[in-house]
Amino acid sequence: MKFGVADFGMNVWDGGCFDIEERLRLLKEIGYEGVERLTPVTAADAVNNAARFHRLGMDYATVLGPTVEVSIQWTAAFQKSYVWTSVSGKDFDTFCRQVNHQAEACERWGINVALHNHLGTLVESQQQLEDFLERCPDCGLILDTAHLAAADGDSVEIVRKYADRLTSIHLKDWLLTNPDIGLDQWYVRGRFCELGAGNIGLDNAAVMRELVNVGYDGWIFVEQDTHLQDPFKDLAISRQYLRDAGF
Image (cartoon, rainbow, N blue to C red; front, side, top):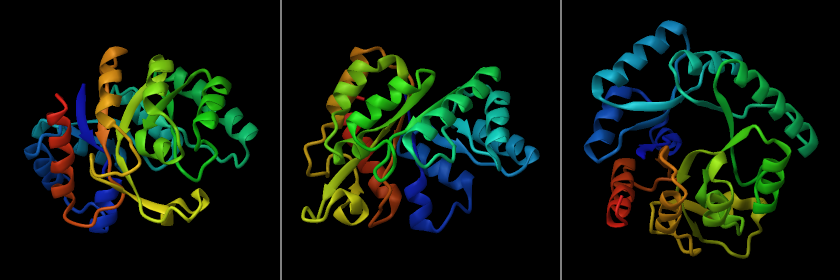
């Protein structure tokens, strides 16, 4: 396995990424091997950024370019394996049809498309996720443990049942702060926190053990969407949580 950071929360805290080399250097110091996305805006920028990662001994899993088509092509060019689903469908049938079309396009370039389950989307609950995986058999899964757990899902069961569909993992935890607020306002109901600090019974160590059991050997991305202090402090706590669990 490789351990990296999905750095959305870092960008929220900082207001953006202003120095990718400094970010990578500091992440490496606390035990991470990369970030999920290379995010260039031109082909030259893609080459330069990929070279920066290589020089620092860091890596990435996918490329997010200025369009979906370019993202697919650049991801293939850098010999990475997947892009995120990126379609416009607002209802489940349309969404699945479009994802299947994106999967066909990705296959022509020798890569996969993968869905990130997320609160407040068409694929929020465990049943919705399983229905999606049945309807889109050529789509992989970027399993987000806290998004699923906050919707009363079971990530260990998903890992066990859909091991062959796992593309990458987002490990995160959830702190329920306002239980009287419904899941339709999930962004007020609680917040994401460092691994081990949640209060909904999510056992990310158990998820990791099940990943080992099923033979998963891909990227594990720690993600914390909401930081209340320097993100590097939170991410160091999460990395130590994984070390304490044997990883």
